Amino acid sequence: MAAPLELRCWGGGWGLPSVHSESLVVMAYAKFSGAPLKVNVIDNTWRGSRGDVPVLTTEDSIVSQPAKILNFLRKQKYNADYELSAKQGADTLAYIALLEEKLLPAVLHTFWVESDNYFTVTKPWFASRMPFPLSLILPGRMSKGALNRILLTRGEPPLYHLRDVEAQIYRDAKECLNLLSNRLGTSQFFFGDTPSTLDAYVFGFLAPLYKVRFPKVRLQEHLKQLSNLCRFCDDILNSYFRLSLGGISPAGQETVDANLQKLTQLVNKESNLIEKMDDNLRQSPQLPPRKLPTLKLTPAEEESNSSQRLSP
Image (cartoon, rainbow, N blue to C red; front, top):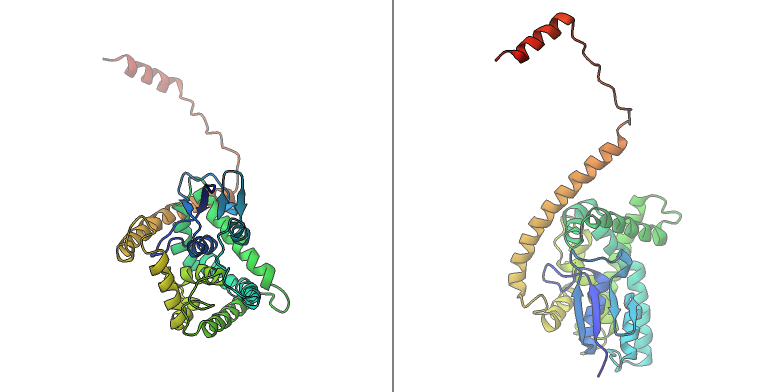
């Protein structure tokens, strides 16, 4: 009997089984390969760290990072690529490298750096799934980590300023989406009628960008113009994840998502208020406490007060 496989990952919303790209890559690959994963969605009892997700655990192994998790599943005979040729295998590696270099920085920016998206969608959603006080601290750290990751790969001469970096990463992302659209064409999947590792990666990167409702939708608008990529995401959701969110249909999930977004926005307002109060306290000058002057009564006033206390 195979050892049980448990995946710890971020949960879903907006009709997605997970809103986290790397978690979604692993979940999709498991569906494609038939790996019997038990999904353990993170909630406010979580005691992990931001580097722990997604993570696969078995009786004797703990594996993190999508590429390592997928390799582990292949060694357990759950292989979604067994029908691919050597050339298709090489193409898979090349396209995954393209996704990580050209598309991932823009996805990270859309979720974690674009101010309106971060404060109205990303931060409240993730904070609502973290225990206090991590809910006040960790989203900000994750945002800084995403920005540092973008600047590490794109903040080189001549792109010294963040505005220049942003313009470049969105140009690269749109070109990447166009290439993916041309490569997919009218096919159901990237290598024919059977999904593979490349389909898991493309779906994991595109589906959150396609489905999450952001106030700033620069890249989302471009993606929605590429109908075959949108159809690709919808087909995988309908075929492999139709009732993955606790048996809730996509239509019913939209109502749940709307209520959740209202709740998380309230949580966000409260956490912002706490952070602002904390910042104001740290920035205010720290003056020593003043000693209040002691008022000394005259003998006549003392006698008057004494007589008043004694009178019935």
